[in-house]
Amino acid sequence: MLEVRGGNPLGGTVQVRGAKNLVPKAMVASLLGETPSVLRGVPQIRDVEIVTGLLELHGVRVTPGVDGQQSDGELHLDPSDMAQGSIVDIDAHAGSSRIPILFCGPLLHSLGQAFIPDLGGCHIGDRPINFHLDVLRQFGAEVDKTSGGIMLTTRGRLQGTKVELPFPSVGATEQVLLTAVRAEGVTELRNAAIEPEIMDLIALLQKMGAIITVDTDRVVRIEGVDTLRGFIHRALPDRNETASWASAALATGGDIFVEGASQPELITFLNVFRRIGGEFEVEETGIRFRHPGGRLTSFALETDVHPGFMTDWQQPLVVAMTQAEGLSIIHETVYENRFGFTHALGEMGAQIQLYRECLGGTPCRFGRRNYQHSAVVSGPTELTGTRIDVPDLRGGFSHLIAALAARGTSQVHGIELINRGYENFLDKLLGLGAEVAA
Ligand code: EPU
Image 1 (tube, rainbow, N blue to C red):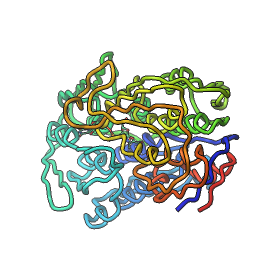
Image 2 (image 1 turned 120 degrees about the vertical axis):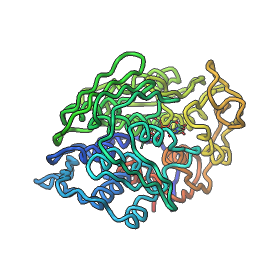
Image 3 (image 1 turned 135 degrees about the vertical axis):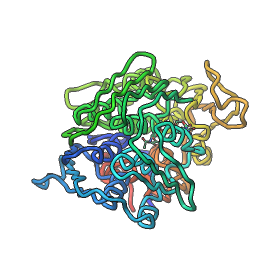
């Protein structure tokens, strides 16, 4: 439990390192190489620990940089002794992550089989894996559901194929990339996700020897090759952590310099940040975000796949929106159930109404399906401290921001979930002047 005394602006510097939504996938890609890989900028977060454990269960040696420079987050990944891990161990280890599903392609190529335990991840909707399994079947894998997981096998080499995703899913696009690079022949993927983390994964695979073309209109073509080598790669910075700290600055009336933040992946976020009334300066080593004083302006936004407004930015920004003058509208079009975290904000004094209708310009696939996926925030409202149970990674960080913006003291339970994606967040908060005590 974390005791948070709110009401003070956060100020100072925090550092962001490699993106949580790229680093674990890059680590999985090391399975595809015939030689060891080196990944830099790896943050110390729970998702990295889980993937490290899973790789080790498959015989991969994962060691920090030879010179022991943990500060640079260097990891060496050596797959030369790769072997099928014990199903019981994999199952026990993977519980809280969705990354195991991305082991399928690399393991099928190298070992002819893969076991994937039932998946965890944040509780922000059903989060099915049907796209992944359909894709793997199209490559020629046999998929058998067993108690506790899924067993995949292949008789011969996986075959390149034509795939069209029903939705530009990040995970399913990664599944296709990690499988197609070593499949026989050409794979054409339509309706692919093109998030910056996907582009970074493509860059890394290209370093390994893959041949991947990204065309207009979300079409990706992959020419399968026989072998790949290891990579040396620095992960792109975490744009979602950056947006979280930016929202913290706005919600608490503070001023935060995010060292390591990179502008090009945040263009859409920065536009919204500015329209709401936040100020930012892009500097050579990072981005400074601040509340300029006075009232914030209400705003309507829709989350979307890249280059739209990223769903992971929505939750922290909603906290800042409770301090904006008038009605703000948020239409969540990526996850059907990502507003659960607003109940705690309501208890703190925020006025947030949820709707089943699509309150945005574009009707989405959740309209008329009984999902409360639109929110109207009426502000500004004073927030007061309360007892909070963290629901998921981004929702949890948003609750922390709300507690820091609120008058009085909050007791935040379940903060371990936040470790999944925010490196050293307690030290960072203390460094920004937050009054928090574990
Ligand atoms: N979907 C399906 N079937 C599938 C796969 C996805 O219906 O087989 C649906 C999902 O239910 C969801 C939508 O497609 O409604 C998008 O899901 P996507 O596959 O794009 O998400 P993901 O790969 O599971 C990653 C990030 C998420 C981020 C999303 C969207 C990682 C580890 N996770 O999830 O990050 O929100 O892409 O950009 O990369 C977070 O960081 O807090 C987080 C949840």
